[in-house]
Image 1 (cartoon, helix red, strand yellow):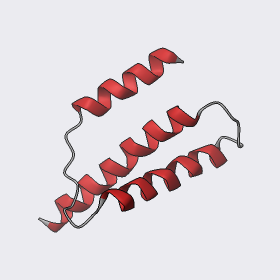
Image 2 (tube, rainbow, N blue to C red):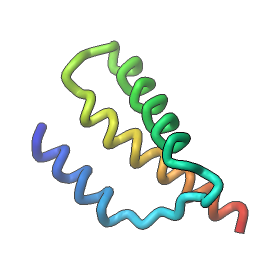
Image 3 (cartoon, rainbow, N blue to C red):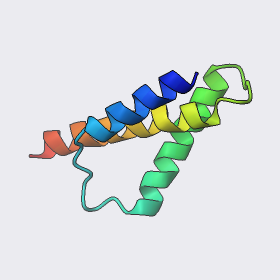
Length: 73
Protein backbone atom coordinates (compact mmCIF):
# COMPACT_ATOMS: atom_id res chain seq x y z
CA UNK A 1 0.00 0.00 0.00
CA UNK A 2 2.88 2.40 0.77
CA UNK A 3 4.27 1.92 -2.73
CA UNK A 4 0.94 2.97 -4.24
CA UNK A 5 0.91 6.14 -2.17
CA UNK A 6 4.48 6.97 -3.13
CA UNK A 7 3.64 6.55 -6.80
CA UNK A 8 0.60 8.79 -6.45
CA UNK A 9 2.65 11.45 -4.68
CA UNK A 10 5.32 11.31 -7.38
CA UNK A 11 2.71 11.57 -10.14
CA UNK A 12 1.13 14.47 -8.34
CA UNK A 13 4.44 16.31 -8.07
CA UNK A 14 5.14 15.74 -11.76
CA UNK A 15 1.69 16.88 -12.83
CA UNK A 16 1.56 20.56 -13.76
CA UNK A 17 -1.99 21.83 -13.52
CA UNK A 18 -3.27 25.36 -13.87
CA UNK A 19 -5.87 26.19 -11.25
CA UNK A 20 -8.21 29.02 -12.22
CA UNK A 21 -7.41 32.23 -10.34
CA UNK A 22 -11.08 32.58 -9.40
CA UNK A 23 -10.89 29.37 -7.33
CA UNK A 24 -9.77 30.07 -3.77
CA UNK A 25 -8.06 27.57 -1.50
CA UNK A 26 -11.20 26.95 0.52
CA UNK A 27 -13.20 26.01 -2.58
CA UNK A 28 -10.41 23.75 -3.81
CA UNK A 29 -10.31 21.98 -0.42
CA UNK A 30 -14.10 21.57 -0.50
CA UNK A 31 -14.04 20.01 -3.96
CA UNK A 32 -11.26 17.62 -3.00
CA UNK A 33 -13.04 16.64 0.21
CA UNK A 34 -16.26 15.93 -1.68
CA UNK A 35 -14.45 13.81 -4.27
CA UNK A 36 -12.57 11.91 -1.51
CA UNK A 37 -15.87 11.22 0.23
CA UNK A 38 -17.32 9.91 -3.03
CA UNK A 39 -14.35 7.52 -3.29
CA UNK A 40 -15.01 6.37 0.28
CA UNK A 41 -18.67 5.70 -0.51
CA UNK A 42 -17.83 3.95 -3.78
CA UNK A 43 -15.53 1.58 -1.91
CA UNK A 44 -18.33 0.61 0.49
CA UNK A 45 -17.31 2.92 3.36
CA UNK A 46 -14.24 0.89 4.26
CA UNK A 47 -11.99 2.70 6.72
CA UNK A 48 -8.23 3.01 6.42
CA UNK A 49 -7.95 4.47 2.92
CA UNK A 50 -8.44 8.14 3.73
CA UNK A 51 -5.02 9.25 2.51
CA UNK A 52 -5.34 7.25 -0.70
CA UNK A 53 -8.81 8.71 -1.24
CA UNK A 54 -7.57 12.25 -0.63
CA UNK A 55 -4.58 11.95 -2.96
CA UNK A 56 -6.66 10.41 -5.73
CA UNK A 57 -9.39 13.01 -5.25
CA UNK A 58 -6.82 15.79 -5.37
CA UNK A 59 -5.45 14.43 -8.63
CA UNK A 60 -8.91 14.13 -10.15
CA UNK A 61 -10.03 17.60 -9.10
CA UNK A 62 -6.83 19.24 -10.34
CA UNK A 63 -7.14 17.38 -13.64
CA UNK A 64 -10.77 18.54 -13.96
CA UNK A 65 -9.74 22.12 -13.20
CA UNK A 66 -6.92 21.93 -15.71
CA UNK A 67 -9.39 20.72 -18.32
CA UNK A 68 -11.82 23.52 -17.43
CA UNK A 69 -9.03 26.10 -17.67
CA UNK A 70 -8.07 24.70 -21.08
CA UNK A 71 -11.63 25.03 -22.34
CA UNK A 72 -11.77 28.69 -21.37
CA UNK A 73 -8.57 29.63 -23.24
